[in-house]
Image 1 (cartoon, rainbow, N blue to C red):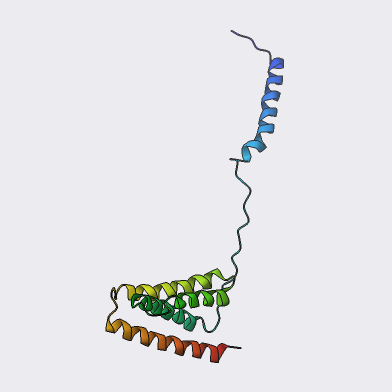
Image 2 (image 1 turned 90 degrees about the vertical axis):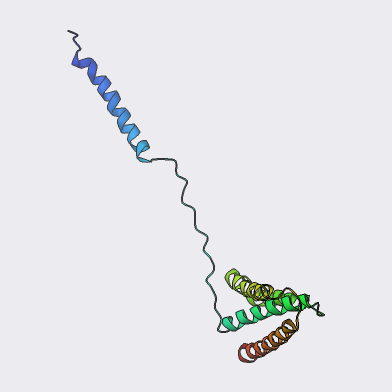
Length: 147
């Protein structure tokens, strides 16, 4: 039989226990995880009382822009430029409002693009009606909410 003295085992036990004590905090830390990143706080959504009318106005602008371009009417791009001015003046640094109005413009554009591929008498009538609706909306918005 092999005889091992207990005196020689104590230093081995101490070394082993010391290693466990030192390794404990390291093992408790787990994987290398990056420090938590601060989330970018989005600006609050600003809603103004005339947003619904403004969205409808943007939709009308998109419709008129498509129809005037389709029928090669003079000033076809002025409607798109008017929309850009509207976005610049109304949305400023409010990306969610800008997205909402842009989506409305595009919805109006696409609505007529899916129906009219040629300039027809019906397209001309629709363009005139939408221009009138746009003028009415612009008057209502400015008279009720303008400075």
